Length: 502
Image (cartoon, rainbow, N blue to C red; front, side, top):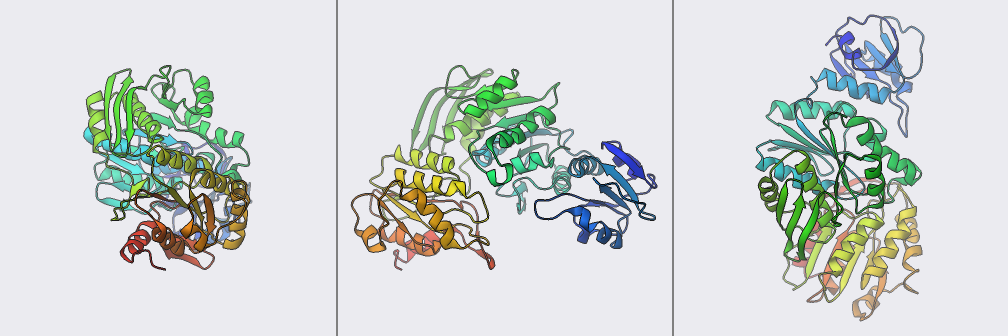
């Protein structure tokens, strides 16, 4: 594609050089550049792409997009832009033929619930014969084409390439998790959204966003800048305080919530260990819910999915069939079968709010005891560690603190931060022997996650509920020495088979 064609979609400040040359590829990693490619110098949290311009040119780049004015680079064409990330997003969309332009596209953003909602919408859109592709936390997929997901929302060039592949394979719709990082970094700016869904906003990623106001502003970008004003529709959960604020800013939004003031609301509901059943009122009529999803918090996810489907003008019958067909989400209150007469669940909850929601949902099932295994990631927001610990301690009979993904941090230091929340609830830490014999409530700290799981299985009694939180679908653990294979579900099954022996 000629550079002049790519530039039509970008906000360009200055061009030096030939605009009629052919661009053979787009890259933001100078190591991937081949002759004839365009290089986008992106400013990152750790490194600055402007420092790699010379490497990109050595590797064959004939065009450089940059936010810094540079002297002539010989035969290389330089394009000065205000925002290299946005320029790449728009150029990538153009380069790959605007693959989302003729697709039904739903973007889902918010702190919690995004993944579950995309699974629900995938099932609904499948029932509507709209052949959905999905881009999200667990993977990027269309049919049997499953790809790893290093990020919830990939860089714009990677996103457009993958969506283009899915569309060529037959995808007619797209459901995307749109993270706050992605919105802040304009990764989705080349996507043609028809519907934007807002789930909720609770403290998360504050190491990046710094405060809740900036976090909220990043989410607002989807609705203010990326939803077309003529036919785009916002779907907002007004059970959330930030959702109420967003709805006030977007008066044409379709609202959902438990209150009858919402456009989509439950008429009747029954939440049990068998799932969620009931009726939901919508502008298109009553939707019957027969969902195997567990936990009261999934009511909000169901309402958001229904709202998005209504915004796409799908019938109540199609929506109901899709909801019933969605058997569950990997690592989201995923049930682990066992012969202990106990309930064992694996969940991705890794924020204070998500953990609170999961534990409250389990309390409603009235088990004999709740045992919660949890940990906090290293090199991430330290402020949430004590919050998660206090939530686990207050909501569980036995809280078992362990490692999550410590990354480059000392696991013991992370656990010391965790202890600051645990001691707000319990005076002292139990030994494993005390925890095994305990009849009351307390906590134990076991740094090795595998040992923590074995211990929890060992002390599990009939009627208990064990929640293993934090990693969910992840099949790895990130240590200072690198990534290793680790899957909570596998660890649980192995511990059950071994009888919980340590």
